[in-house]
Amino acid sequence: MATATCNFSQSLTNIYYSGWDVDWPGKNVSQRVLFNYYGTGYDFSKTTGLSIIQGRDFSADFPSDSSAALLSTTAVQSMGLKNPVGMQIRLQHQPVTVVGIFKDFVSGSPYRKQRPMLVYLNPTGGSVVALRVNPARNLATTVQQLNVLLRQLNPGYPPEILFVDQQFEEKFRNEQQLRSLSNLFATLAIFISCLGLCGLSAFAAEQRIKEIGIRKILGASVPGIVGLLSADYMRLVGLAALIAFPLACISMHQWLQNYEYHVQLQWWIFAAAGLLTALIALFTVSILAFKAATANPVKSSRSE
Image (cartoon, rainbow, N blue to C red):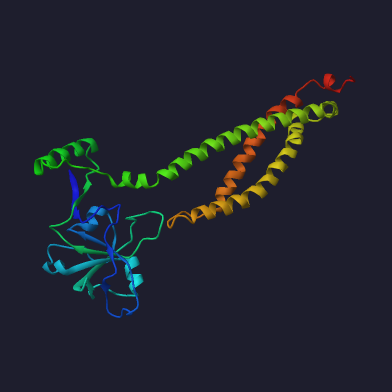
């Protein structure tokens, strides 16, 4: 049913317990560092999938782990320690020994940098049980079995089963709504732009109908005429890209600053957007340009 299990003092996706009362050798008297606290049982890293980058996880093979702690990489940096594994620090005036360092993970708000985190061993306490389910088993069947088991263990309290990925998805609900609206308005903008290009192309082709007829009589090819009529619009698309891309880059950069963890803007994103825009404009203009280029030159060049 589950490949690993571990009890926690609070949910993995929310932080409720924090404090200033962590001391370590060499700490400046005036230095104040706010730590997030997690009480956990054994198999902390196996259950969460976190990487222990130095030292080890809590283990029942070490009875001394009852007074041990794990630190996040941000905590080690904030404390100014180089090799803290094996060092004795104080948590709420009680001595604990650092046995491992783990890589930071997003446990509270995904919009801000994670605070230093200290994890202490509390194998018999906690209000949350975390499970890493077996991916080879059917998830619905696993949830059903868990519900039956939890009701048997504690029939007075109905179980509440939550998924970490779904809880984090809720934190990004505003971004999902923004994405949907952006896609909608972008589609409408492209459609309206194509309509405008069609109208402008038809008007330009009508204005130059005699010129097109004369060029065909003199031996101009259909691709050459289509290219001639499309070139002016491609220059306009290029000019629009030179104006729009810097503004878009600045706006996207400012928007990404709202998130502590975000992607980096890459040049190929704008190159791909420019190429796609050019292809859409070229396709739209070429349809009417081809129609004008294949018209009978005798009819188009005769005197009215």
